Length: 350
Image (cartoon, rainbow, N blue to C red; front, side, top):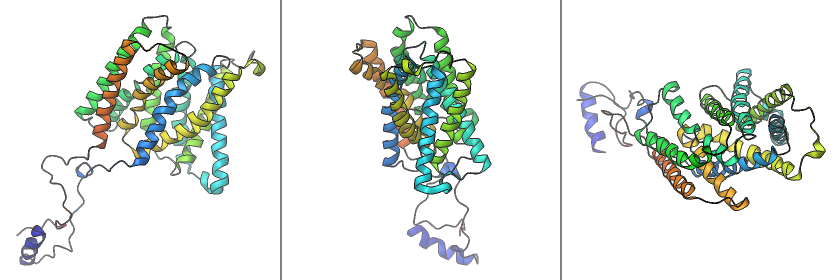
Protein backbone atom coordinates (compact mmCIF):
# COMPACT_ATOMS: atom_id res chain seq x y z
CA UNK A 1 0.00 0.00 0.00
CA UNK A 2 2.95 2.35 0.60
CA UNK A 3 4.00 2.43 -3.05
CA UNK A 4 0.44 3.17 -4.17
CA UNK A 5 -0.01 6.06 -1.74
CA UNK A 6 3.31 7.65 -2.61
CA UNK A 7 2.65 7.51 -6.35
CA UNK A 8 -0.54 9.58 -6.36
CA UNK A 9 0.97 13.00 -5.45
CA UNK A 10 3.64 12.56 -8.08
CA UNK A 11 1.00 11.82 -10.67
CA UNK A 12 -0.96 14.89 -9.61
CA UNK A 13 2.09 17.15 -10.08
CA UNK A 14 2.43 16.01 -13.66
CA UNK A 15 -1.25 16.47 -14.35
CA UNK A 16 -1.70 12.73 -15.00
CA UNK A 17 -4.20 10.43 -13.32
CA UNK A 18 -2.25 7.27 -12.50
CA UNK A 19 -5.41 5.20 -12.35
CA UNK A 20 -6.59 6.25 -15.84
CA UNK A 21 -3.50 5.22 -17.81
CA UNK A 22 -2.88 1.54 -17.18
CA UNK A 23 0.50 0.24 -18.23
CA UNK A 24 0.67 -2.52 -20.83
CA UNK A 25 0.67 -6.06 -19.45
CA UNK A 26 4.08 -7.60 -18.73
CA UNK A 27 5.62 -9.80 -21.41
CA UNK A 28 4.52 -13.43 -21.51
CA UNK A 29 7.83 -14.71 -20.18
CA UNK A 30 7.56 -12.37 -17.18
CA UNK A 31 4.27 -13.82 -16.01
CA UNK A 32 4.36 -16.69 -13.54
CA UNK A 33 3.54 -20.09 -14.98
CA UNK A 34 0.03 -21.33 -14.14
CA UNK A 35 -0.23 -23.89 -11.38
CA UNK A 36 -0.98 -27.41 -12.50
CA UNK A 37 -4.16 -28.73 -10.94
CA UNK A 38 -5.04 -32.18 -9.68
CA UNK A 39 -6.71 -33.07 -12.98
CA UNK A 40 -3.34 -32.76 -14.75
CA UNK A 41 -1.63 -35.16 -12.36
CA UNK A 42 -4.56 -37.60 -12.50
CA UNK A 43 -4.52 -37.61 -16.31
CA UNK A 44 -0.74 -38.01 -16.27
CA UNK A 45 -1.07 -40.98 -13.90
CA UNK A 46 -3.56 -42.60 -16.28
CA UNK A 47 -1.13 -42.18 -19.19
CA UNK A 48 1.76 -43.44 -17.06
CA UNK A 49 0.04 -46.66 -15.98
CA UNK A 50 -2.33 -47.51 -18.84
CA UNK A 51 0.09 -46.84 -21.67
CA UNK A 52 2.76 -48.72 -19.76
CA UNK A 53 0.51 -51.77 -19.96
CA UNK A 54 -0.40 -51.38 -23.65
CA UNK A 55 2.99 -52.64 -24.84
CA UNK A 56 2.20 -56.00 -23.32
CA UNK A 57 -1.31 -55.89 -24.82
CA UNK A 58 0.04 -55.03 -28.28
CA UNK A 59 2.52 -57.87 -28.10
CA UNK A 60 -0.30 -60.31 -27.24
CA UNK A 61 -2.58 -58.91 -29.96
CA UNK A 62 -0.02 -59.31 -32.78
CA UNK A 63 0.58 -62.94 -31.80
CA UNK A 64 -2.37 -63.91 -34.02
CA UNK A 65 -3.38 -60.59 -35.64
CA UNK A 66 -1.68 -58.64 -38.46
CA UNK A 67 0.01 -55.48 -37.20
CA UNK A 68 -1.52 -52.58 -39.15
CA UNK A 69 -4.97 -54.17 -39.44
CA UNK A 70 -5.07 -54.73 -35.68
CA UNK A 71 -4.09 -51.09 -35.14
CA UNK A 72 -6.82 -50.04 -37.60
CA UNK A 73 -9.42 -52.13 -35.76
CA UNK A 74 -8.34 -50.56 -32.48
CA UNK A 75 -8.55 -46.92 -33.52
CA UNK A 76 -11.55 -47.14 -35.86
CA UNK A 77 -13.56 -48.91 -33.15
CA UNK A 78 -12.50 -46.44 -30.47
CA UNK A 79 -13.15 -43.46 -32.75
CA UNK A 80 -16.64 -44.65 -33.69
CA UNK A 81 -17.49 -45.29 -30.03
CA UNK A 82 -16.33 -41.79 -29.15
CA UNK A 83 -18.39 -40.29 -32.00
CA UNK A 84 -21.46 -42.18 -30.76
CA UNK A 85 -20.87 -40.93 -27.22
CA UNK A 86 -20.62 -37.33 -28.40
CA UNK A 87 -23.78 -37.60 -30.51
CA UNK A 88 -25.74 -39.00 -27.56
CA UNK A 89 -24.45 -36.50 -25.00
CA UNK A 90 -24.01 -33.33 -27.08
CA UNK A 91 -25.78 -33.93 -30.38
CA UNK A 92 -24.30 -32.92 -33.75
CA UNK A 93 -22.91 -29.75 -32.15
CA UNK A 94 -20.38 -31.88 -30.27
CA UNK A 95 -18.71 -32.79 -33.57
CA UNK A 96 -18.90 -29.35 -35.19
CA UNK A 97 -15.45 -28.16 -36.28
CA UNK A 98 -14.03 -25.87 -38.94
CA UNK A 99 -12.19 -27.17 -41.99
CA UNK A 100 -8.86 -26.05 -40.57
CA UNK A 101 -9.55 -27.79 -37.27
CA UNK A 102 -10.54 -30.97 -39.09
CA UNK A 103 -7.39 -30.85 -41.22
CA UNK A 104 -5.27 -30.25 -38.12
CA UNK A 105 -6.87 -33.20 -36.34
CA UNK A 106 -6.26 -35.40 -39.37
CA UNK A 107 -2.59 -34.40 -39.53
CA UNK A 108 -2.04 -35.04 -35.82
CA UNK A 109 -3.92 -38.34 -36.05
CA UNK A 110 -1.72 -39.56 -38.91
CA UNK A 111 1.49 -38.54 -37.13
CA UNK A 112 0.48 -40.02 -33.77
CA UNK A 113 -1.54 -43.09 -34.63
CA UNK A 114 -0.23 -44.16 -38.04
CA UNK A 115 3.37 -43.00 -37.93
CA UNK A 116 3.81 -43.28 -34.18
CA UNK A 117 1.64 -46.13 -32.95
CA UNK A 118 1.42 -48.00 -36.26
CA UNK A 119 5.18 -48.32 -36.57
CA UNK A 120 5.41 -49.37 -32.91
CA UNK A 121 2.90 -52.16 -33.56
CA UNK A 122 4.90 -53.26 -36.60
CA UNK A 123 8.14 -53.01 -34.67
CA UNK A 124 6.80 -55.26 -31.93
CA UNK A 125 6.70 -58.12 -34.44
CA UNK A 126 10.52 -57.97 -34.27
CA UNK A 127 11.20 -56.50 -30.82
CA UNK A 128 9.99 -57.63 -27.36
CA UNK A 129 7.40 -55.42 -25.67
CA UNK A 130 9.67 -54.40 -22.81
CA UNK A 131 12.45 -53.24 -25.11
CA UNK A 132 9.89 -51.46 -27.29
CA UNK A 133 8.77 -49.43 -24.28
CA UNK A 134 12.39 -48.62 -23.52
CA UNK A 135 13.02 -47.35 -27.03
CA UNK A 136 9.84 -45.26 -27.04
CA UNK A 137 11.28 -43.36 -24.10
CA UNK A 138 13.26 -41.34 -26.65
CA UNK A 139 10.07 -39.28 -27.18
CA UNK A 140 10.88 -36.69 -24.47
CA UNK A 141 14.26 -36.04 -26.07
CA UNK A 142 12.62 -35.31 -29.43
CA UNK A 143 10.07 -33.09 -27.67
CA UNK A 144 12.78 -31.01 -26.02
CA UNK A 145 14.58 -30.67 -29.37
CA UNK A 146 11.39 -29.69 -31.22
CA UNK A 147 10.44 -27.22 -28.51
CA UNK A 148 13.90 -25.63 -28.60
CA UNK A 149 14.22 -25.33 -32.38
CA UNK A 150 10.59 -25.11 -33.49
CA UNK A 151 9.06 -23.28 -30.55
CA UNK A 152 11.91 -20.95 -29.69
CA UNK A 153 11.83 -22.01 -26.04
CA UNK A 154 15.20 -22.70 -24.49
CA UNK A 155 15.03 -25.75 -22.21
CA UNK A 156 15.86 -25.13 -18.56
CA UNK A 157 19.08 -26.75 -17.29
CA UNK A 158 17.11 -29.03 -14.96
CA UNK A 159 14.94 -30.17 -17.89
CA UNK A 160 18.00 -31.05 -19.94
CA UNK A 161 19.53 -32.82 -16.95
CA UNK A 162 16.31 -34.80 -16.43
CA UNK A 163 16.14 -35.81 -20.08
CA UNK A 164 19.80 -36.87 -20.18
CA UNK A 165 19.50 -38.72 -16.89
CA UNK A 166 16.42 -40.51 -18.18
CA UNK A 167 18.27 -41.57 -21.32
CA UNK A 168 21.15 -42.89 -19.20
CA UNK A 169 18.66 -44.95 -17.23
CA UNK A 170 17.14 -46.27 -20.42
CA UNK A 171 20.57 -47.23 -21.66
CA UNK A 172 21.17 -49.21 -18.49
CA UNK A 173 17.80 -50.88 -18.90
CA UNK A 174 18.10 -51.73 -22.58
CA UNK A 175 21.80 -52.63 -22.95
CA UNK A 176 21.38 -56.31 -21.96
CA UNK A 177 18.41 -56.75 -24.32
CA UNK A 178 20.04 -55.04 -27.30
CA UNK A 179 23.01 -57.36 -26.93
CA UNK A 180 20.68 -60.32 -27.52
CA UNK A 181 18.76 -61.52 -30.55
CA UNK A 182 16.92 -58.32 -31.57
CA UNK A 183 16.50 -57.47 -35.26
CA UNK A 184 17.86 -54.00 -36.11
CA UNK A 185 14.92 -53.29 -38.47
CA UNK A 186 12.53 -53.42 -35.54
CA UNK A 187 14.67 -50.99 -33.54
CA UNK A 188 14.82 -48.57 -36.51
CA UNK A 189 11.05 -48.70 -36.99
CA UNK A 190 10.43 -47.86 -33.35
CA UNK A 191 12.95 -45.00 -33.31
CA UNK A 192 11.25 -43.47 -36.40
CA UNK A 193 7.93 -43.93 -34.61
CA UNK A 194 9.17 -41.93 -31.62
CA UNK A 195 10.15 -39.03 -33.87
CA UNK A 196 6.77 -39.01 -35.62
CA UNK A 197 4.92 -39.23 -32.30
CA UNK A 198 6.89 -36.29 -30.90
CA UNK A 199 6.23 -34.32 -34.10
CA UNK A 200 2.49 -34.95 -33.79
CA UNK A 201 2.47 -33.93 -30.14
CA UNK A 202 4.40 -30.75 -30.94
CA UNK A 203 2.17 -29.91 -33.90
CA UNK A 204 -0.99 -30.23 -31.81
CA UNK A 205 0.18 -27.26 -29.73
CA UNK A 206 0.91 -25.07 -32.76
CA UNK A 207 -2.01 -25.60 -35.15
CA UNK A 208 -5.75 -24.89 -34.69
CA UNK A 209 -7.34 -27.91 -33.01
CA UNK A 210 -11.05 -28.39 -32.17
CA UNK A 211 -12.06 -26.82 -28.89
CA UNK A 212 -13.77 -30.06 -27.83
CA UNK A 213 -10.99 -32.46 -26.81
CA UNK A 214 -13.24 -35.51 -27.25
CA UNK A 215 -14.11 -34.46 -30.79
CA UNK A 216 -10.44 -33.87 -31.57
CA UNK A 217 -9.58 -37.34 -30.23
CA UNK A 218 -12.37 -38.94 -32.27
CA UNK A 219 -11.22 -37.34 -35.53
CA UNK A 220 -7.60 -38.26 -34.80
CA UNK A 221 -8.51 -41.89 -34.11
CA UNK A 222 -10.68 -42.20 -37.21
CA UNK A 223 -8.04 -40.62 -39.46
CA UNK A 224 -5.19 -42.61 -37.96
CA UNK A 225 -7.21 -45.82 -38.04
CA UNK A 226 -8.18 -45.28 -41.68
CA UNK A 227 -4.53 -44.74 -42.68
CA UNK A 228 -3.55 -47.87 -40.71
CA UNK A 229 -6.22 -49.79 -42.64
CA UNK A 230 -4.96 -48.55 -46.01
CA UNK A 231 -1.35 -49.41 -45.15
CA UNK A 232 -2.39 -52.86 -43.91
CA UNK A 233 -4.28 -53.54 -47.12
CA UNK A 234 -1.36 -52.25 -49.21
CA UNK A 235 0.95 -54.63 -47.33
CA UNK A 236 -1.41 -57.51 -48.09
CA UNK A 237 -2.18 -58.26 -44.45
CA UNK A 238 -5.72 -59.28 -45.42
CA UNK A 239 -4.46 -62.28 -47.41
CA UNK A 240 -4.77 -65.43 -45.40
CA UNK A 241 -6.42 -63.61 -42.50
CA UNK A 242 -8.66 -66.05 -40.63
CA UNK A 243 -10.62 -64.43 -37.82
CA UNK A 244 -11.42 -67.87 -36.46
CA UNK A 245 -7.71 -68.48 -35.93
CA UNK A 246 -7.31 -65.36 -33.78
CA UNK A 247 -6.76 -66.45 -30.20
CA UNK A 248 -9.02 -65.43 -27.35
CA UNK A 249 -6.16 -63.66 -25.59
CA UNK A 250 -5.52 -61.58 -28.71
CA UNK A 251 -9.19 -60.51 -28.80
CA UNK A 252 -9.03 -59.60 -25.12
CA UNK A 253 -5.83 -57.62 -25.71
CA UNK A 254 -7.48 -55.74 -28.58
CA UNK A 255 -10.52 -54.94 -26.41
CA UNK A 256 -8.20 -53.62 -23.69
CA UNK A 257 -6.39 -51.46 -26.22
CA UNK A 258 -9.69 -50.02 -27.48
CA UNK A 259 -11.27 -49.25 -24.11
CA UNK A 260 -8.28 -48.32 -21.97
CA UNK A 261 -5.40 -47.59 -24.34
CA UNK A 262 -7.46 -45.45 -26.74
CA UNK A 263 -10.70 -44.19 -25.19
CA UNK A 264 -9.25 -43.53 -21.74
CA UNK A 265 -5.50 -42.94 -22.06
CA UNK A 266 -5.35 -41.34 -25.52
CA UNK A 267 -8.12 -38.89 -24.63
CA UNK A 268 -6.27 -38.05 -21.41
CA UNK A 269 -3.10 -37.51 -23.45
CA UNK A 270 -4.89 -35.24 -25.95
CA UNK A 271 -6.18 -33.14 -23.05
CA UNK A 272 -2.74 -33.02 -21.40
CA UNK A 273 -1.21 -31.62 -24.59
CA UNK A 274 -3.36 -28.53 -24.00
CA UNK A 275 -3.25 -28.32 -20.22
CA UNK A 276 0.38 -29.10 -19.33
CA UNK A 277 3.91 -28.29 -20.55
CA UNK A 278 5.09 -30.53 -23.38
CA UNK A 279 8.19 -31.63 -21.50
CA UNK A 280 6.07 -32.74 -18.54
CA UNK A 281 3.66 -34.65 -20.78
CA UNK A 282 6.62 -36.35 -22.44
CA UNK A 283 7.73 -37.93 -19.16
CA UNK A 284 5.17 -40.69 -19.75
CA UNK A 285 7.71 -42.28 -22.08
CA UNK A 286 10.14 -42.60 -19.17
CA UNK A 287 7.62 -44.15 -16.81
CA UNK A 288 6.03 -46.53 -19.34
CA UNK A 289 9.14 -48.75 -19.58
CA UNK A 290 9.23 -49.15 -15.82
CA UNK A 291 5.55 -50.13 -15.82
CA UNK A 292 6.13 -52.52 -18.74
CA UNK A 293 9.04 -54.21 -16.97
CA UNK A 294 7.06 -54.56 -13.74
CA UNK A 295 4.10 -56.06 -15.60
CA UNK A 296 6.42 -58.52 -17.31
CA UNK A 297 7.67 -59.55 -13.88
CA UNK A 298 4.17 -59.86 -12.39
CA UNK A 299 2.37 -61.50 -15.34
CA UNK A 300 5.06 -63.31 -17.31
CA UNK A 301 7.43 -64.02 -14.40
CA UNK A 302 10.30 -62.21 -16.11
CA UNK A 303 13.26 -61.79 -13.73
CA UNK A 304 14.10 -58.42 -12.23
CA UNK A 305 17.82 -58.09 -12.81
CA UNK A 306 20.30 -55.64 -11.32
CA UNK A 307 20.40 -53.47 -14.47
CA UNK A 308 16.61 -53.39 -14.51
CA UNK A 309 16.38 -52.11 -10.95
CA UNK A 310 19.24 -49.64 -11.37
CA UNK A 311 17.97 -48.32 -14.69
CA UNK A 312 14.44 -47.98 -13.35
CA UNK A 313 15.69 -45.96 -10.38
CA UNK A 314 17.67 -43.61 -12.66
CA UNK A 315 14.61 -43.12 -14.87
CA UNK A 316 12.46 -42.17 -11.89
CA UNK A 317 15.02 -39.56 -10.78
CA UNK A 318 15.08 -38.09 -14.29
CA UNK A 319 11.28 -37.84 -14.34
CA UNK A 320 11.29 -36.16 -10.92
CA UNK A 321 13.69 -33.51 -12.26
CA UNK A 322 11.46 -32.66 -15.23
CA UNK A 323 8.32 -32.69 -13.08
CA UNK A 324 9.90 -30.40 -10.49
CA UNK A 325 10.73 -27.83 -13.19
CA UNK A 326 7.17 -28.00 -14.56
CA UNK A 327 5.66 -27.41 -11.12
CA UNK A 328 7.96 -24.49 -10.27
CA UNK A 329 6.42 -21.04 -10.84
CA UNK A 330 8.07 -19.16 -13.67
CA UNK A 331 10.56 -16.47 -12.74
CA UNK A 332 10.54 -13.10 -14.45
CA UNK A 333 13.54 -12.34 -16.63
CA UNK A 334 16.42 -10.30 -15.29
CA UNK A 335 15.48 -6.66 -14.79
CA UNK A 336 11.73 -7.34 -14.47
CA UNK A 337 10.22 -7.16 -10.99
CA UNK A 338 7.39 -9.51 -10.06
CA UNK A 339 4.00 -7.81 -9.99
CA UNK A 340 2.45 -6.94 -6.64
CA UNK A 341 -1.32 -6.89 -6.17
CA UNK A 342 -1.22 -3.52 -4.40
CA UNK A 343 1.19 -1.83 -6.83
CA UNK A 344 -0.19 0.94 -9.08
CA UNK A 345 -0.86 -0.02 -12.70
CA UNK A 346 1.03 3.03 -13.95
CA UNK A 347 4.52 3.94 -15.02
CA UNK A 348 4.16 7.63 -13.97
CA UNK A 349 6.97 8.76 -11.70
CA UNK A 350 7.48 11.98 -9.67
